Image 1: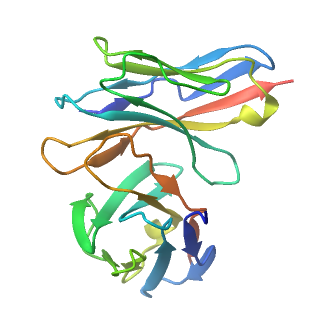
Image 2 (image 1 turned 120 degrees about the horizontal axis):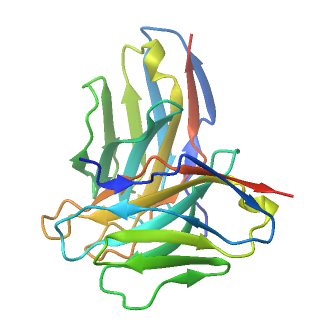
Length: 117
Length: 115
């Protein structure tokens, strides 16, 4: 079973509009972390935002925010006011295994976002 | 603070050869993970080293191996290279401790091409 599911292989958004990239996860751990990364065409993976399983407030970082719905096991990335430089592949990831001591990072398959001028 | 450094950036090898990739983590980071990224398979976890010990391992054949040195620098070795090993190999470092709020920071990757 997929631990991290990103159902949108590709998306388009008009510049300056908001867009939501979906991510659902599956874990039996009580303590875990959720991350989003951006990978531009140049290849480097850039850490964007983090949400802890015990955090009650949704994380925000610049024009990125994470819509965390724990009961639904979803951690969607919201990009407000999209910019051309936001065009990239976006990966959702989870760190679990604190209870078992394995501390694994698990990545989704990614969503390719294209921002249109 | 210097980021994660991977060397070399590009590598061309032929089938049957072996290759060693290097990764220097961010200073103070004790965990180093390796990933293989291909267009068809996405980002696949190879293994993770923490304090010189392999802590996690993905589902790759034994041709893929790694190690970590006392200064946290890590190397990954692939023996008997196959055409399917052509990929971008990413190294990521993190503090590696018990707390979940520790993102991995990635290097620019080594692009390996097998002829």
